Length: 130
Image 1: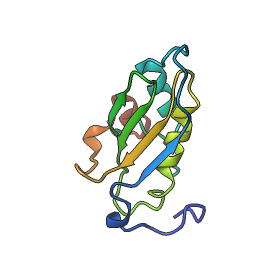
Image 2: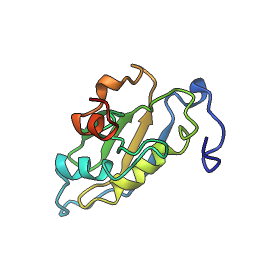
Image 3: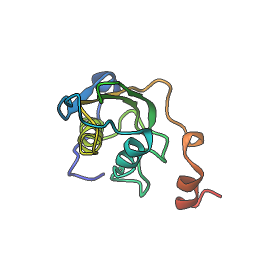
Image 4: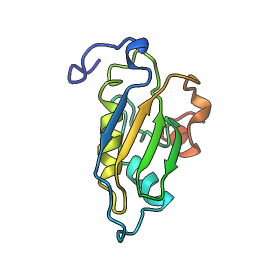
């Protein structure tokens, strides 16, 4: 376990945990498209797995609002994951840095549980799962 992230967490304490970043956009600012938001999420990696969180299948839902705000629902590979308290903020920070993104809210959920079937083909290849 990486001491940088501490001890495993209790899933009951982290279910529904939210993290926010960014600021509302003014009316004239062009809004980010879906590809821009995905690319931002692909810059975040689980510190114990060499694959980005998007390709790992940790992102369950992304809502784009007309205001430029983004709501993300995500999970982690295991409910007692030691990065549960930090990962949503890492995602919110990364997405909020993308051009055309306003306020980002990331909510952590454990339902449904993550499974390897949620990984992209690229992630499975990177992890040698073929």
